[in-house]
Amino acid sequence: MQHHRAAMNSAQYQGQTLPIGSGAVEGGCRLVGARTNGCGRRWSVPGCDAIVALRVAVLNDRLDLLRPRPHLAWLEAA
Image: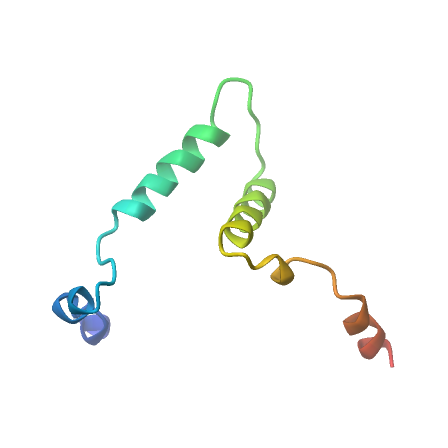
Protein backbone atom coordinates (compact mmCIF):
# COMPACT_ATOMS: atom_id res chain seq x y z
CA MET A 1 0.00 0.00 0.00
CA GLN A 2 2.96 2.31 0.53
CA HIS A 3 3.69 2.33 -3.20
CA HIS A 4 0.12 3.33 -4.10
CA ARG A 5 -0.57 5.91 -1.40
CA ALA A 6 -1.06 8.70 -3.99
CA ALA A 7 -3.75 6.67 -5.75
CA MET A 8 -5.73 6.21 -2.53
CA ASN A 9 -6.90 9.80 -2.04
CA SER A 10 -10.44 8.95 -0.93
CA ALA A 11 -11.46 12.53 -0.18
CA GLN A 12 -10.53 13.66 -3.69
CA TYR A 13 -12.45 10.79 -5.29
CA GLN A 14 -15.49 11.42 -3.09
CA GLY A 15 -15.39 15.07 -4.15
CA GLN A 16 -15.59 13.91 -7.76
CA THR A 17 -18.51 11.63 -6.80
CA LEU A 18 -16.50 8.55 -7.79
CA PRO A 19 -17.19 5.27 -5.97
CA ILE A 20 -14.46 4.41 -3.48
CA GLY A 21 -15.85 1.30 -1.82
CA SER A 22 -15.18 -2.29 -2.78
CA GLY A 23 -18.77 -3.42 -2.18
CA ALA A 24 -19.67 -3.52 -5.87
CA VAL A 25 -16.64 -5.68 -6.67
CA GLU A 26 -17.29 -7.98 -3.72
CA GLY A 27 -20.95 -8.29 -4.74
CA GLY A 28 -19.92 -9.11 -8.29
CA CYS A 29 -17.56 -11.82 -7.05
CA ARG A 30 -20.35 -13.34 -4.96
CA LEU A 31 -22.73 -13.24 -7.93
CA VAL A 32 -20.27 -14.90 -10.31
CA GLY A 33 -19.44 -17.49 -7.66
CA ALA A 34 -23.11 -18.27 -7.07
CA ARG A 35 -23.82 -18.62 -10.79
CA THR A 36 -20.79 -20.77 -11.56
CA ASN A 37 -20.72 -22.99 -8.48
CA GLY A 38 -24.36 -24.04 -8.38
CA CYS A 39 -25.56 -27.61 -8.19
CA GLY A 40 -24.56 -29.55 -11.31
CA ARG A 41 -22.57 -26.67 -12.81
CA ARG A 42 -19.03 -27.26 -14.00
CA TRP A 43 -16.98 -24.35 -15.29
CA SER A 44 -13.36 -24.36 -16.35
CA VAL A 45 -11.28 -21.31 -15.47
CA PRO A 46 -10.89 -20.31 -19.17
CA GLY A 47 -14.63 -20.78 -19.75
CA CYS A 48 -15.54 -18.66 -16.75
CA ASP A 49 -13.02 -15.98 -17.75
CA ALA A 50 -14.49 -15.87 -21.25
CA ILE A 51 -18.09 -15.49 -20.09
CA VAL A 52 -17.14 -12.80 -17.57
CA ALA A 53 -15.25 -10.91 -20.31
CA LEU A 54 -18.33 -11.17 -22.53
CA ARG A 55 -20.61 -9.90 -19.75
CA VAL A 56 -18.30 -6.95 -19.05
CA ALA A 57 -18.17 -6.08 -22.76
CA VAL A 58 -21.97 -6.21 -23.03
CA LEU A 59 -22.51 -4.06 -19.94
CA ASN A 60 -19.98 -1.48 -21.14
CA ASP A 61 -21.28 -1.53 -24.73
CA ARG A 62 -17.81 -2.58 -25.93
CA LEU A 63 -18.50 -5.72 -27.95
CA ASP A 64 -16.08 -4.31 -30.52
CA LEU A 65 -13.30 -5.49 -28.21
CA LEU A 66 -14.39 -9.11 -28.60
CA ARG A 67 -15.48 -9.28 -32.24
CA PRO A 68 -13.09 -10.83 -34.73
CA ARG A 69 -11.39 -8.34 -37.00
CA PRO A 70 -10.72 -10.05 -40.33
CA HIS A 71 -9.10 -6.93 -41.79
CA LEU A 72 -6.36 -7.14 -39.13
CA ALA A 73 -5.56 -10.73 -40.09
CA TRP A 74 -5.24 -9.60 -43.70
CA LEU A 75 -2.86 -6.80 -42.69
CA GLU A 76 -0.72 -9.15 -40.61
CA ALA A 77 -0.47 -11.63 -43.50
CA ALA A 78 0.81 -8.94 -45.87
